[in-house]
Length: 238
Image (cartoon, rainbow, N blue to C red; front, side):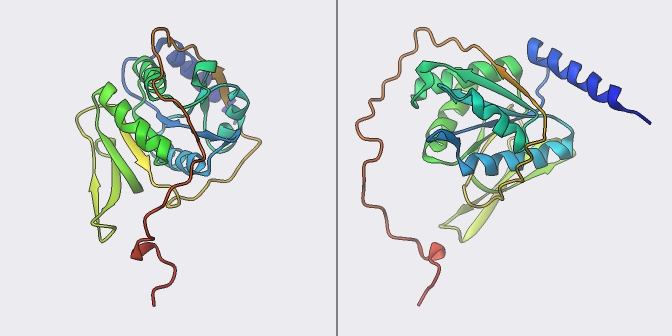
C-alpha cells in the first residue's frame, strides 16, 4: 500500500509548527558549530546522538546554524541526520560573541520550544551553553559521555565523569524545558553521511538590534602552555 500521504501530512503539520511555534515542547535541537567553513566533527557526533534519541521518542531533529555565509552547510546537517535546519545567517554572527549568540538562540528557543537542546562541549559550546541555560532559566548537563532517555517521563539522562573520570554520575532535569546537555567530543560516533536524505533548510530572522558584542579577538590562534596529559588519557603508562 502507498503510505506517501502520511509523509505529506507530517510535513504539513511540521510546517505549521514552525510557523506558529507550537504550544508544548517538542523536537530535539542541535546547535551546530562551524570551523574553517565546515561543520566540526563534534557537531556531527552531537547530531548522531540527536538522531538516535529522536527516533526513540518519535520527534524531529533540528539543526541550528548561526553565522555569516553558513546557509550552504544546512544540507550537510540534513545528510548527517537533521530533518529541519534553521539558519540565522547574519554578518553580526560571523565571529562568536556570547551576547549575540545567546540572544539569537534564546529567541529561537522561546519561539519554537524544543524539548531537548544539545551542544558539543567544545570551548565555544562550554562558554555558550551555561549562558544560554541561565537566560532560558533551565538546567544543563555538561560534558556528557553518554546520553539516554527515561521513556516513562521523556527525560534526557546525561552521564558525565567526576573525580577525574574515576566515577560517573547520571542526572536528569525533570522540572524545566528545554532539557540541555553538552556532549564531550570523542565519545560518540559520527553518523553515516547520507547525501540522499531530504530535509527543510530555512532561513530565520533574528533581532540583534541593541545587542553589542564585548569581545575583541586579538589572536584566535594564540599558543599557550597546556596542562600535562592526565594519566587516564595516556595511551601508555609505564
